Amino acid sequence: MRAMGILAAAIGLLAGLAAASAQPRQIIILRHAEKTDGPDLCPMGVDRAEALAKDYLGKGAARSLFGADRPAAFYAITGHTKKTIKPTADSWGLPVLVPSTDKAQFSDKDKFEDQQTRDAARDVLANPRFAGKIVVMTWEHKHIANEQLDAASDPVTLRRLLKIDLYTMHHPTEKIPKTWSGKNYDYFWIVNYADLAGSEPSSVATVKQTFTAPYEKVPDNEWGISEPPLDGCVQ
Image 1 (cartoon, rainbow, N blue to C red):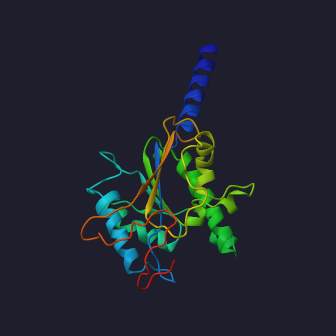
Image 2 (cartoon, one colour):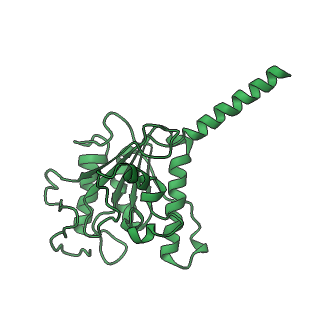
Image 3 (tube, rainbow, N blue to C red):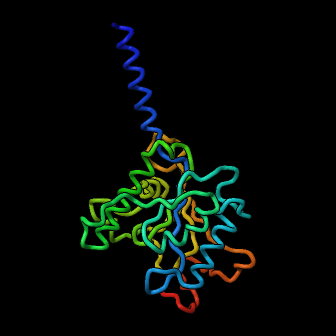
């Protein structure tokens, strides 16, 4: 009986360790590409979506952010974000995942996106399929980082839900913006977790997107600086 008790305790401990180690080792965050006033990407946004697949995120990308690894999943939230990452996901033969949030429960768009962001972050951090792997999250900028939203007690941004705020608190010299600039579509935030059982990132890097031919005209404006006016696009 004592041996069975020890075995049960060991199994419980292993299960607990597996659950605690379920989070990815890296999460790549980007904003959707340039958009129209409706549900679509504008022509430049379509170019950016294709350029992201060609240069950074697609299978065989010239400057792949994955190195020799394969991404485990691509998450998105709105129509714009799904259309931005779809060329990349298609190149890997992967679907674009969306949060399982029930839209019928929300009459307010912002509240719905709040809950979608919570649900997505919870799944990304706890899903055993992503343990030790790389997940890409293409998001709406206010729910990546927004100082005003982050003042609320209940987290609704990736900055807080993925504990990027704790990282910045403990690494004050590393300037990770508190608000994602509404003027920028051209950055990645790369969030690494060295301790897969811990909750705080081990590093957070900002990487600017720059593209090669035939997409060299896709804007790569500096943080906080507006893009030039683009036909059919709204900021």
